[in-house]
Image (cartoon, rainbow, N blue to C red; front, side, top):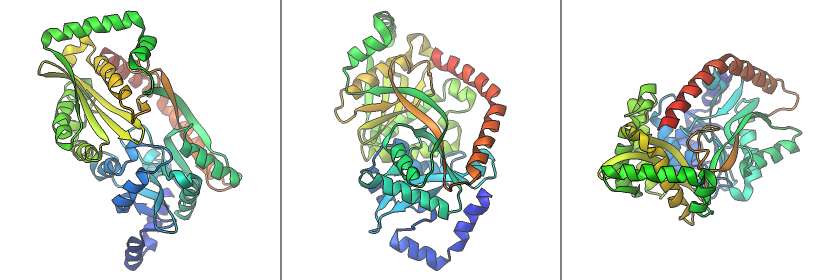
Length: 401
């Protein structure tokens, strides 16, 4: 049913209608191919959002949508002002595509990062949220599924307020907290409180031992040219260890490699991506990609050289990154975008962000939201034992890094 709804929206528009829509740049209530959202309008929205999300910046999400494995061809719910200003954006896919559940529900598209909070203009966040909901209804949806949603942020507050006026309530289907860094704190004090003197002493000993392989230094690539070069170092590190064995290294898939090679220098050009690398002499032992959006940073991915695992290269890099971001007055919060109870980052960054999957009913008395909730619960019940086993294995591998 969801796929039929998606197709019907596209087929109702004639070529002439499509031309007029592009000319006005205001497809009110329409479900639009994500690639057709004007990048300049999207960029303007990203600079004045109520709540940042680095994974829905246009340079990132358009690159994901163009080639990333399993993530191409998303649509967009968009909200526009009467003056053709983009005020809200939510990339979506059908519930059939997301979960193989044939219900008329739109699900937030996976941006290759575990945060899908929609972009809402800060000056009229509730109005933008309301127009996104109206657009979903006009596109045939009976409910929306916001995956990996920030539960305590401005966007969730806006959606909740709009729904309350219609006598509706969002349903949190699952939630967890994950590590975050309060970058306004003193980093050394933060690390002492988080790790304790004994652990810090052991990490200093490991760093000194790492120094036997060459002077240890922490490098930050910021410009597009620097980021392009540092990315290849990161990709080689990521593909050298357990992520490659698991088949999740970016460079192992042509579409994923193309996405990250396009997105990172494009965002570096706007000052919103940097790649940090820890080296022992000339040898890179760990590297990570960090996105920036407004006053927030996002710790996307970490790659390490497992030959140096006894020196905890991933932890060493994270300690340097902590000091680097705390020293930056433009950053107040860093989202680890990690799993709940992540064994590496949780002891280091003691702040917490509440993240969850939120089901939003769009019509009072409609059973579709309840059917979707039941179907998702049954799906999770069937998959949970295998997921727990995989998570246990992955956490053991990550901890050893």
